[in-house]
Length: 134
Image (cartoon, rainbow, N blue to C red; front, side, top):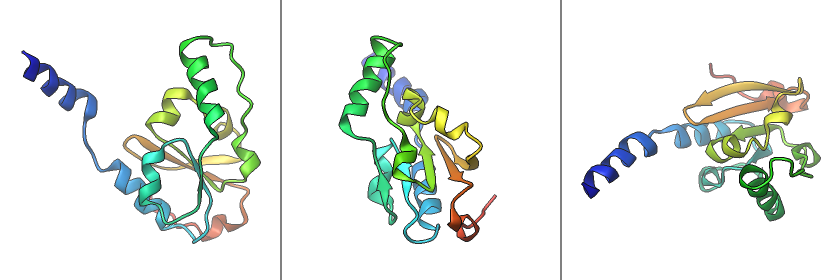
């Protein structure tokens, strides 16, 4: 019985795929120095680009908002760090950290790889140097 539960969890919850590596590969194909904002730290070991991750106190507020008090306010604006790209993966989706930011006209969905969505800032000067692979 215990084995069946783990088998079920592995197949239906874990669902291994290549979306992490595909996303990292796409991000590494952008112009060198392209700043990436994400709340999904598993990307970092594969990136050859600068990235920004929200400060620790943001995580505490996100957990509080998600599980204890939905009225908790979050004082975090990723645009303060001037990213050219925002990547929303499993953690970003869970907490909705970037939902308001990517809904602005300033960002557009560039590409999705399974669990990851890459949004590009349309006002960046280097947007023309970012490769487009549909």
